Image 1: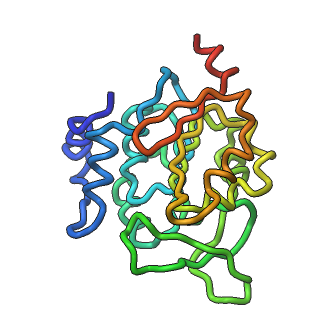
Image 2: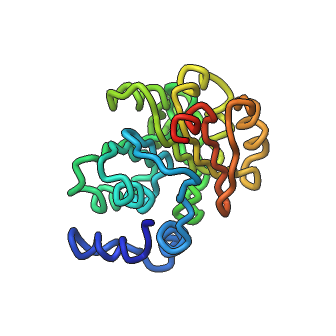
Length: 226
């Protein structure tokens, strides 16, 4: 189990964790390392993990500490969060860092409101002729870039962009995912839950809940672990 003590171990071996004052950093740290909200209901040895909405990299560190042999793609659109993510993971060779927003297609994105808490930045698509903040990346593109044919864990905490992510083009990568860990944000954007479950063939997945996270494990994958 990855715990607060594992985070302390990381700090001793590498460098102190960066927890900014008057931000949501401590809450994220607490949820990840004290409440252990990313624990899975089955034991696995993943080869490839996508951490979409990686924030400052605390969830990425959790996965790296728990699964040190796994390659992890950490995706974060906000520049300030991404800079801390880089500092947290710069000595970990198994981390691929991608500054982008996760979307259902190649696109240009801008932040809806920068006057929100650091973990709550939402994005929307704009024309390439308009001012934009960050480019989008697709799940399939990340998978190809990493050189793997499957995603063992797809963690999604993307502040409402799950509505767009599951609105189209998910069929090219959905069957390549073994476990989905997602937080749904209907309070921020109507239709997130509907979009997600419309893309999920529930006959193929076993669902669990861990605090605010929905965890789907592919039944076929569970059988191989049984």
